[in-house]
Length: 488
Image 1: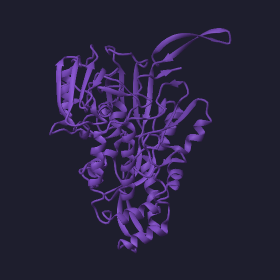
Image 2: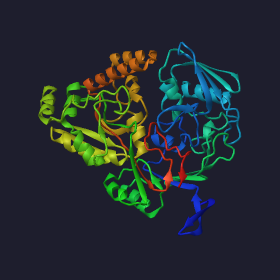
Image 3: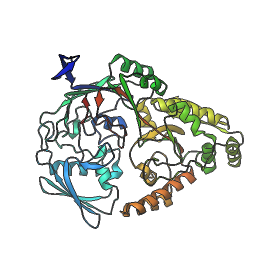
Image 4: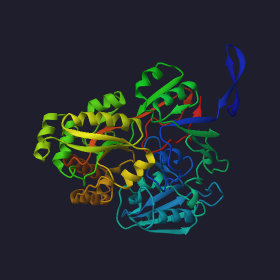
């Protein structure tokens, strides 16, 4: 039976006891490979742990605003290079270790160290030193101004970990958050329980389970049976009308930071030829993809930037769907009869369905793709880390991650001195209008180079029990923050 507190309700003039639930079961499509947000790029890690188990110095709220996290406040020097964070006075890790300045210094130095395995090590590249004048104060000095430094310090990858437990966080995560790790039943669920010693606002929920269900039909069945109370990033879009018409459920469709790409290995022939990449851009009909994969619940993009953010430039008209133009470009590049390639697809349904549609569209212009489905761990190892692929399809859900195109080691294998110069200027720029202008230049450069197939934004679709309140509608960061969830 669900735990909870008893409240008196009046039903038809008679008194009846109603129990307010304090447990929650959330469905997710992907199981995380482990539970250390500072040691992996998989979004599913942060979707379980962000704000629930682990805290960063700064936090992103449901509106996308930066709010206090482990740090209750901060100041920034006029030169934009010195940040002073004041920590909460009574923060503790779940094992009782102090959530103090020493833990912050350890975490930041670990993330930027030579042997760091942080999935976003670039977030910490501008840090020159971390000083701890007292247990509640952390002074971070940058080697150069970094306009996104605070935003990056709010990411799950910047979670503060304890020196005494960091080595075992993958399987037994210990943070400073309002929930503690209870258990992980591999292949099934991760269970969290409320932290009675949390020094901040206490969540209403006593227990939260994250269940992992990849099959779309099983997702639908789990909701209907009540085995899952809410399914986030719901992928069975064809079932949405049925849930919308059932008063027991509520359906929300919000925004994400998930630019969905036909990711392209720019260093591998024939994709090292911009004419080939532009041909593929003309061969892909985004409307067909959005209708066929998302059942219309999506927005097309023409570069690596979300339409809901300031600084977005609409470049979707740069490569209109034009198979004849695509064939002409392929012939010009020396492929009048097309070519063969491999499309490696990770597990998410949008990737598997979308990959089939992309393959069919490209086949019409002579690009013959062999589809290779991959499990998540294998995709991360071979494609993302090993860069062993021709094409793949994936949503990049890190916020404001257009900076990855400045990284020579990133799996796109894109090299552009012009883009790097823009990124360096962006890092030196604090004025929002000037930053947005630079973002616009970056978007245009990526679009002109047709670095990837820029397809659509992944929508944030949630199907939930209608009595649940407080789940995020939009996903400004990789998170399923349940700290404010209640039952009506």
